[in-house]
Image (tube, rainbow, N blue to C red):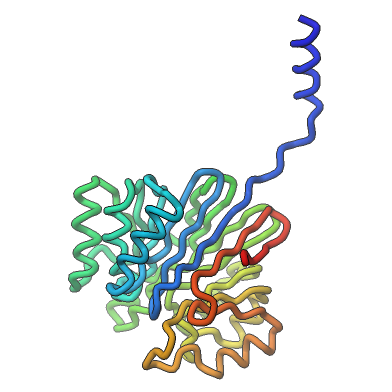
Length: 271
C-alpha cells in the first residue's frame, strides 16, 4: 500500500507532460502540392499532388508514414496539380472529413476524389472563414475560402488558406491563392503572422506580394515546385522578396521531400 501511495504522489508532482512533436511533411511531388501534417496521433493531408505523383503519394503515406486513418483532407482548390492525388489518399486510408471550396468541378481528377469519398462515406464540406478544427494538440483555422472566385474565373483565389497553431509555433498554408486573396486577408485584419509559410502557387509572381510577406514574416518559406518546370517557378521576383524579409527558402525541387518538426516552441528541419 505504501508503495502504491508513493507512486501516486510521484505522478501528482511530476512536471506537466510536454507537447508531442507536430510534423509537417512537404512531399516532393514535382509541379504540384501535397503536405501531410501529423500531431498527437491525428493527421491531415493538404492537397494530393498531380497525376504523375500518385505512386509516390501512395508509397509515402502507406509505407513511410504507415497511415491507415486520416482525420482531414483539405483540397485547397480543384486544379489538377493539387487534387489528382487525393483519390489515391482515399484509397490508402479511411478519411473522416474533406474540406474543399467547391463541390463540383469538371475534371476527371476532381470526380475521382468525389467517387472515392462517396465509396467511403466521407463527408465533403465547404468551410467558412473562421472555422476551426482540432488536430491533436494543434488548432487549425480557416483564414480564407472564396468559392465565388470560381465564377469570376479566378480558381486560384478560391483556395482555402489555413493556419495551424501548435504551442508558440505556427504554419500558414496558402494553396495557389493570388494577390487578390492576399489583399482580402490583409484588409480583413486576419492574423497572418506565421513561422512557416507554404508559398502560394509554386512561387508564381502573381502571389506572395511584399505586403503579404511583411504581414506573415516567416522564418521558413517552403516552395513546392517541379524541377525544370515550364513556368519558371519560382520566379526571381518572389525569391528576391523572400530574401528581403530574411526567410530561409526550402524548395522541393532542390531538397526533395521536406520535413519540419515543432515542439511547440521552436521549429527544426529534418536532415
